[in-house]
Amino acid sequence: ETARRTLVADAAHRTARRLAPPAPAPTPAAPDETAKPRRTVYDAEHGTDLPGVPVREEGAEATGDATVNRAYAGLGATFDLFLKAYGRNSMDGAGMKLLATVHYDRNYANAFWNGEQMVFGDGDDEIFLDFTVPVDVIGHELTHGFTQYTADLEYYSQSGALNESVSDVFGSLVKQYTLGQNAADADWLIGEGLLHESVQGVALRSMKAPGTAYDDDVLGKDPQPAHMDDYVRTSSDNGGVHINSGIPNHAFYIAATELGGNAWERAGQIWYDVMTGGTLTPETRFTEFARATAKAAKARYGDGAEVQAVLKAWTAVGVPT
Ligand code: ASN
Ligand code: ZN
Image (tube, rainbow, N blue to C red; front, side, top):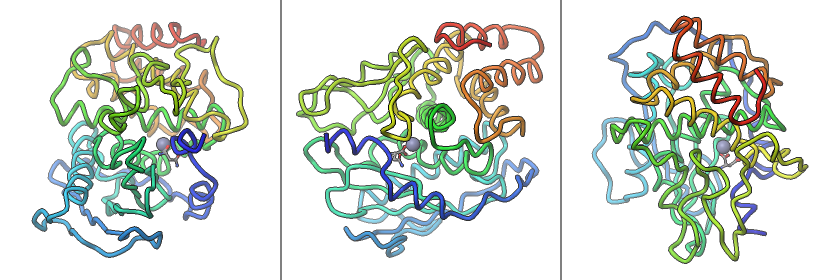
């Protein structure tokens, strides 16, 4: 149960997020392909004071600490996807600094966005390894920043599951973009390489096959549904935000594989347009989000394969459009 709890949000993180400054009005930065990230990686030295000691600034050479270097590279990979694929300069669209703290606490088996920066634990070495290992986990956490500055989806119930799903979508796209993989070749896993070898499982979540990422004596079975028929009603984990995200995750996977090619191009662009289009509210539920993807597909690509792929995807997971 302790292990399972580590997969999800805890009260401290929610409080941190609520205390964060309100998102400023979106600044439509002119797409500048030459923009550069401004990264700083800090070391908490196994304490919990944030941000900790700065250990690698933008442009500095690699340190002797692989965790620091992975965090630095992951911030860069996420910055690159948002800039090169969507013309967005950092998470706020206005060049904000990218800050990450590693070696947070002792045996800390999670990673989170606290409203201002990312935080990574080293894992407990029994179930979870170092949270900087999967680049999609780094992309996931940083995308919580993007969401905060755009649709600001409330971290509860269906809007919370959408918030989680958007982090998985762009987290996975960071990995695919970094590896130059097309939708058909991608593994669509979140957190591959994060589970200790003694755990029966391959990752934290699977967008391709939600519910199959792990099935373990200690962790239990991956609880994610892939269809509305299996939507989980629960009061824990802010209404199951890390569970029901399986439904919109799988919809994105279907739309992207249906379209083929690089998932960050058309499918990713549609999801990006929805998040930045100003039509979502923080309370947006699955159906409104689904309709917004169809609208965005039509607006950008006309009445063609893109809108068809999107509609097929939501129908497949039981979300009416
Ligand atoms: N790793 C989790 C996440 O980013 C932590 C949290 O829920 N705050 O979703
Ligand atoms: Zn998350």
